[in-house]
Length: 375
Picture 1 (cartoon, rainbow, N blue to C red):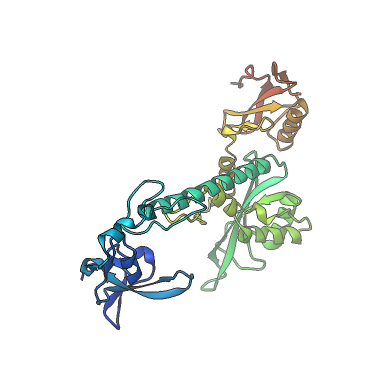
Picture 2: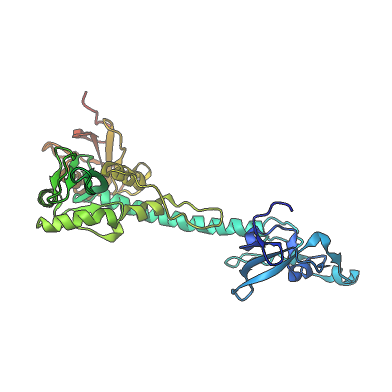
């Protein structure tokens, strides 16, 4: 027997397919034999079976017959010539299928199976494109929020509580802000656990709660998902200064939406690999923001390259000053020098401002085109 994608039906010893997409093209039901543009009569031998949905949408098992063993029907030539050829012609690629092109998608013309799948993928890709734009907007807003901090909690049961005892969990907590400065880095062990092999800098949960409340209390946290945010939420609450957490800031869902991958069946891929650390969560958010291609006149254009970071602000004077104040608030702008606004000619009062930065902040501010980086 030739190799198939189905399994063998033990009762009648024929292949059994679990879905229509795995059925070879030469295996047809009785109805599909009759619907051919040159109809045929199937043989009496069942060649395979398939479990799928019928025209009512209910799951059922169908007998399949080998079209190579079938015979022509007694339909006359006149009747065959009177049939409508459009029923077998794809409205997109013009292919003349032997089966009816009865696949319709959102008001499109009759399509062959290949064009139907292509249209379904195209529709899914357009939806993904729209979703990607929403995630880019979110990323730009969270990067402009001076209270935002990216956090990651890695739980690793790698420390034994005494010789031969059970392994007690150890949490590695990291947090960075939008300036890529580390806000928090520590290892947390359970209260009262004998963790002789833990790092010397490890602290217990009570101490961690106080430190997290002091460092992150009142700030907006961006975590991979709720499972990674929950320990920080709990510890900050125990420390007396809760963090600001919104389930819509889960980077996993945001990153999946921004990637917008569509598989061959037209389904969005809902999984992606975790960046793994707080600083990588920030990198993912910066990439999502697509700042170098931003077209918003009131958006800071940021090139995330240490030593050559440039912020261009273009817009109304009040908007430029407000964005400059936000950047200063999060530590990007250093010093007390006031920004120099340059009016854009023939732009109705629009101004521009360029700020050159490095890892520790701005090195010099000035008009667009005149700012130079300090040596």
